Length: 483
Image 1 (cartoon, rainbow, N blue to C red):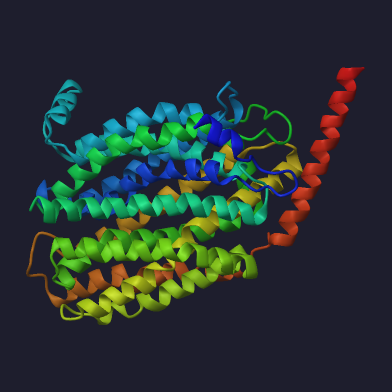
Image 2: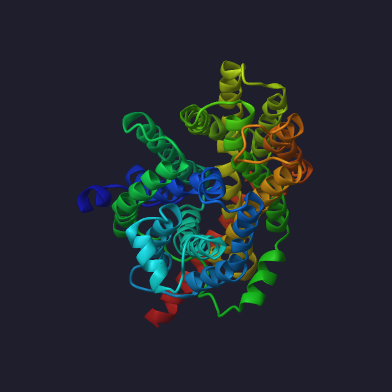
């Protein structure tokens, strides 16, 4: 492996291109954490409400409340990962620290009735699976995500300074991420058909076991063999939590982008949290067909990523995201018209609708990486971790908000996830919260995105200025040393 990676290329001078082996090793680390993400939205609300007897509204509220810890932890980890230097880099130590916590908290959340979960919870003074249990372990899982995912994404943003190459890096990463998402759907299907054990509880067990194996298997090769690039700019000074947020929020393009992220991430989260209930209670399909629906959705998302990358090279990233939101909203508008007999039509709509999701995941992250260049240009400092901490905090907050709006809205309209006899009003509320309402929320971002100011030309100018300035600083430093 060392020889293989040594023969690959780091970003080439003047091109910013990342070698294939390194980009694959880096991207593969996104797979195990992505196995986790979808089951939290799809299965945890159903499992804790239907199987464990917690109220659906309480589950949604606890999932949203647990995200409040990110207000503190995300900026803190972002600032520290910018500041601390180790022989292994700035980002990697945090990923190493977060991996064991992620494995433990995931197991506790997904398999609460296992002997390990019962013993650990008892040792902590807990008794039984209740609201406190859910809150503690979902909060611990989100903390582990911060430790692993935030430095990981900041690392990816720094792998190349090139406008299009950043999209290529994030595209590879999200393709592996969709591989993890599809695995989280294939595992329940394999358990349902192969072991004849359908249901959310068995799906969560299978996912937890897979992450236990995959997390070290795919994370540590990236840490071992993909070097972090040199730090651009000067050494980052100590920045307080409040000062860090003020710096980031003062960046106009970033502020505009995170506002847009709030709208379309909320919409996507609403769709994800209602999808199980829509398929099961409105479409009246069994669990195994639900997994097939969502699997097709994410296969379509993965396959479409190269097409969106090609379009972004022609239109620019921001207008390609606009096109993606419009495409998603178009097909969402047909969903409330479907009924139990429209299985084939729903499947086709899922494919068309799913093809938009890739653009809404990898392109905005690439845009956020470009914005860090603006800060580096202005301040001569590289604070990628700080920027991506707020990016992650907003993304997770919007995700939690979407879950809360959807679950609370469905409960308010009388929907009972444990009942097979919901009335037409309750079913229609689920359909609307799954499709049209999220689309409307996402579309609020369109005017802001269309007029987004940081395009390819401006980013390339910034990159050139930063590179020339860094070259002058290095030359001055060498002159001083030689003297």
